[in-house]
Amino acid sequence: MNKLLVIAATLGLLSTANVAVQASPQQDLKEFRAYFADRFPDVPFKDYINGVYAIDQASREQWESIEEFPPYELNIDKGKKLFNTPFKNGKTYASCFRNGGIGIKQDFPYYDSATGKVVTLESAINDCRTKNGEKPLKWKKGAIADISAYMAYTSRGNKIHVVVPAEEGAQAAYERGKAHFYAKRGQLNMSCADCHQWNAGNRIRADLLSPALGHTSHFPVYRSKWGGLGTLHRRYGGCNKQVRAKPYKAQSDEYKALEYFHTYMSNDLVLNGPGARK
Amino acid sequence: MRTHPGILKTAGSALALAGSLALLSVPGLSLAADTSVVDQGKAIAFDRKKGNCLACHQIEGGKLAGNIGPPLVAMQARYPDKAKLRAQIWDATRANSNTIMPPFGRQQILSESDIDKIVEFIYTL
Image (spheres, rainbow over the protein chains, first blue to last red):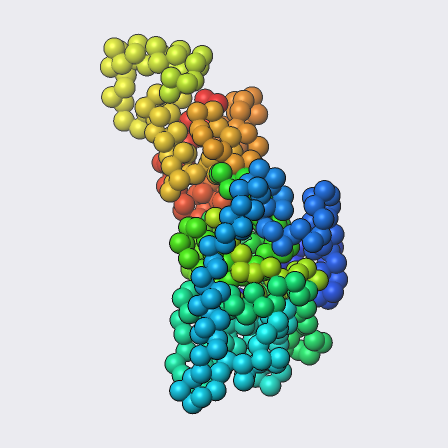
């Protein structure tokens, strides 16, 4: 679909939300939160980090008992070890990040004006490797998810703080992510918002649909269905495939933009990754 | 199909009668009461890889249905015009451009004949 059409489709979808002129990210954020506050008046804002369990008492208790012996514990240990193991040149991941990479996940993704790109935590991990003469890791699971899980773990409790500066490239990336979120796609013609906004709390077959607010707080996530840990972009691919749309590549500009919008929408919620889901 | 009393019982006996009169060999027959078409329609509607209507609609005889769309009941009363019912399934976005219901015909998720069969099934609800 060409860009104009995507934008037109997005505006069409949003017409009820009354966007004559393009809304600012701050305005979007306000409306997004208000939408969910209205839809789930009994759910406190801070609870949205728990995904579907924030709105479903029945499955919540089962999940809480899983979290007592978390299936991702081993991954955090592996990630920590990898994180602290020096590259061949003697440097470590710590050298690539502010504060030695500890407790910083809340700032991701961010827009890098120098390269004109959105930087996700995973892309920064692989950039660090290539900069130090190492081969990049595969994007969706395995070592990269372990390292990301460890870094997420050290950031638990920090408030998500994604910034969309006024500069053109940042705004464009944000708008691209927003368009992806609201555009109908795939043979089944459904948008992310169809399931995770307009129908959050409803059941699709036996699955309760989680609200998009808080979606990104606990990634990477251990999924029973995967039998392991996976990154946010792995999930994006899965949700694109469900509607029979061709998924984009993990860490493509498209998914980075989606992550930028999607995470911005969860600003001020605390990180609680890695998490466990079914 | 035993789960649908009333209508189908009469449909069944009508068919038995039709069968004995050898009416069923007419090609392209679209008899509303043709149980085999209704059965096929039900199978297509319930098949996760085909209609998967249960993802969103409660339908009698179907388990673990979703609740995104309204339960499909009393369809004849709500759609006196069968063509309107077919149009809703063929492309739900005509009536509501923002609907989550997939446009089964327009996007060729189902074939025309699959849709015809689903319509026959849905019409018995």
